[in-house]
Length: 201
Image (spheres, one colour):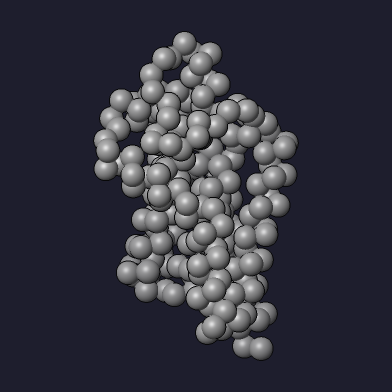
């Protein structure tokens, strides 16, 4: 199996499995199960993994490319801007409640906070911007460097960011799955533009 096929297959499997669990078990059940199975190691891992879905990952990779191939650095900037705009538009349209509000309505009184990560409230749960950003960034990287080790590494990091959002009680599985699908589409679209329009110029 080619490196790119590994990444695409893994992405589809993650999205389908996440949506299936969400539909079968309901929005709250997986969150409650995850909260009941937290560990100190997992707390710290997901606490830091979620940062890859923020500006830190884009800035680090953008700077790395800036001193090597500026066109790739430009694509990273376009990628970040596109994800930001799409996330804002979709969250404004849907305005789904965060898990903290949902669980409060259920009457669940278990732990919400992980370390000092803030418990998010409000109505900006769908889709997950962190998940979308991570999948966009790592899809672009996996498409750019089509090697098995890169594909597996990118897949692992993207899934880690998505799951961190559920672990930190910021999103439902549904939110991160849809975010992953949209992020994949954005990441590949930006790669396609780079590969067909800018790569040889």
